[in-house]
Length: 106
Image 1 (tube, helix red, strand yellow):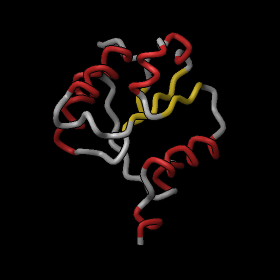
Image 2: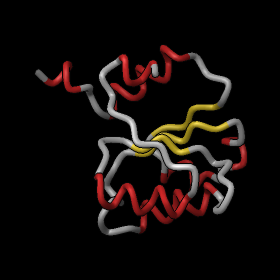
Image 3: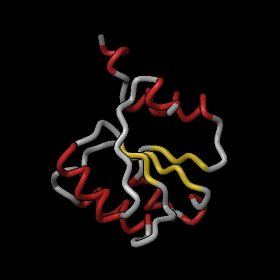
């Protein structure tokens, strides 16, 4: 709700393959990726996003309590990494650096 109040349009996916398919069709401005997914390891999904020719250039922010398991190579795949719990203002600032809201573009 807070991200929407800040001008972001959100699309939520509970499963990794669902997220990859949705990103291909929607082409979001940024992807917030939690590593704890029920069907696919978030690290594998991060690599799949980067390898995909349709969505590989979309900025990805890993937002996870498990971000410490990322290897240095995996951290390079992400545009930013935010460890839960996080400060909301910090997350918003990081997102704004990657993709401004519609009201900031005008």
